Length: 124
Image (cartoon, rainbow, N blue to C red):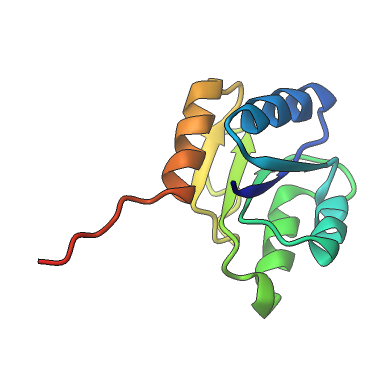
């Protein structure tokens, strides 16, 4: 079971993602903006962060830059989400995937499964 932090300012999005990811066997934590996300990570490490870009208080780009500026958090993969096209948004953030909203929940689950369970490399 992987621990996933979902950061989004839309309660419905948090609820849908939490329910879907929990049903897949993940432990899910939620935050309403990047500041809450950073506070959570100070208390509880996670295996992956799923983060919206456009949020009040601290947006996803600032969250990502702040998170990856701390050496002990640099290895946490970040998946960005946004209704805006991925046209340079988050370029200053090392993210592993981008999901466009509105999203297909199966696409989200497939993306997360691929990132958390990469295929085994067979030695030749």
